[in-house]
Length: 212
Image 1 (spheres, rainbow, N blue to C red):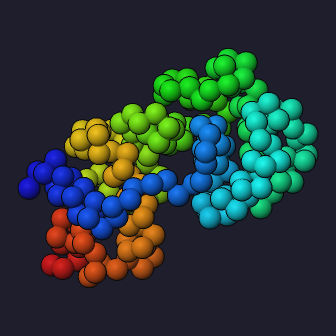
Image 2 (cartoon, helix red, strand yellow; image 1 turned 90 degrees about the vertical axis):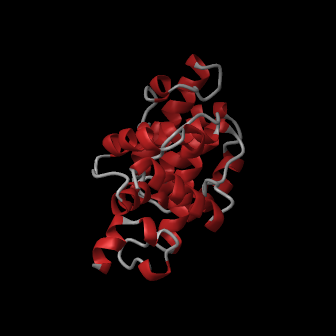
C-alpha cells in the first residue's frame, strides 16, 4: 500500500473512532484561540482552559489586553509556566492586531508569523480552525504518531508538515491532526501505547515491526 492509500485508510478509521474532531482549547473569538495557543506552550490544554475562563472575563477585549498592566497579566497566567514571556507576547500581539490588522487575527501564514511567539504550529491551527483553510498542526502528537505509522520520517516539524501535505487530502488535514491528538491521549500514549487495542494497528509500521 502506498502512503496516500495508507493515509486515507487511517483517516477513515480515525473518523469512526473520533467523529468530533475539535480543538481542545476553548475560545469564542479569533484572538482568544491565538492567545490560548500561546499559553499552551509547555502547559496542558486543561490548565489553559481553566486560566482563560477567568482571563477573558478580566480582559474582555483586545484593547484591554493591549492596555494591560504587564505584572498583573503575568499574575493571571502564572500557572501556565513561562508566564513573563507569554504575557509580553500576548500584550504585544494585542497591540499589533489593533494597529496593523484592524483588530482581526490575520488569515495568511506570512502575516501570522510576524506576530510575537507565533510559529508554524500556531499559525496552522489558526488557519485551520478559524478560517477553515487546509492546515497541518505538527504538535508532539502529530510528529510522534505519524512517525510510528510511517507517514513521516522526521522529528522536525517543518519537514513532517511538508511530508504530510504530500499525502493528506487538503480538506482532511486539519481534522486529521485534531484526531491524532485525541488518539495520542487515549490510545497511542507516548510511554505506554496500547498497540493491541489500536484501530490503526494494521496500517502502522511500528506495530508491524513489533509483531515480527
